[in-house]
Length: 469
Ligand SMILES: [Zn+2]
Image (cartoon, rainbow, N blue to C red):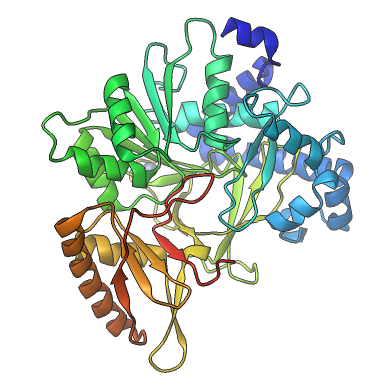
């Protein structure tokens, strides 16, 4: 570790910014209405002032914009195309960032002495490159420690800082992905004697090997995707030596109620879910009532329709505009995320005034099928999952729409188990399709394991291959 520190530039960390972010986040956690809203206004004003002055891209696009609603929404493709005009630090170029990422084992090092660089997995067809400054990392650290890892508004923070705890991270470890880079950074910046014991395992390894490594390492906390935790839970249920964790921290994919119950049951543990993105690491955290609270002092979300107009309160959106209030180096103002979200109008029983949101994952995962009467029927992943999980009683599956329109179901099961799961899923799906008015549909059982996305290793439970090029 010390040899590493000597050779490599330190990961970005600023003690003063960090103390300030912790203090402000603590105040806003205690009183979101009074302090949270005040910080949010301040940060938004500073973000708009900096971006329109120092980012050539935003200076061009702003055209007199002064308030958030004046800004035209922007997507990943446009930002990547104008990458060299985007950041306020003019040394930040796409060629430079990509060369840094390609250098491989240096991912947690400070790029240009002061930034972290991570890439998004590219579920929308193009990977994004996001540069994080010390201020935004301080904000993510504060939110993670004081909200996500806390046992309650006044409870003790149980962050990665906790010395002596053993963490296993099973995720995408082969590239500059946000989770992997963040875990590496936290380990490097921990004070001597405080670094957690960490084991990183690639999600692309066979499940047998992942399980064997977890057994050998015996972590207190497992950090991974819902589908991976659910797959492990399914195996451990009828095991004589079940895997046990104190906590399972989940993110990166949608978590269904059925998955949550089976994970908590199987491991006899606390399940903590979160919602984040490469564009903002910790968008929302889960409270003890299982609700996702938006960190709206640090990030603004706007649920919008396909034309980027606001949707009625309480409705699920088609996409979501994100404004990152923490990162003024590479500003994100009304950035279009492909997630369906909604604000829940009812207050949460936990008492927090931070807004409650629900997330339906990627809208490009929705399946559009031909209707009986000539039109189309849109099936959102959550609904498909509900039919297969609740009605057919199958928790691990993948539904692939082949290029010819045939629906293929895959399961991480063998022989008779797979055949029975397929029979139940097919019957429930076809019954549901009839009720929805979907045109007669071929549903077949696929061979082999469910497919994971190249690179990130994420498992999309609904995959439309008709648009694959
Ligand atoms: Zn709550």
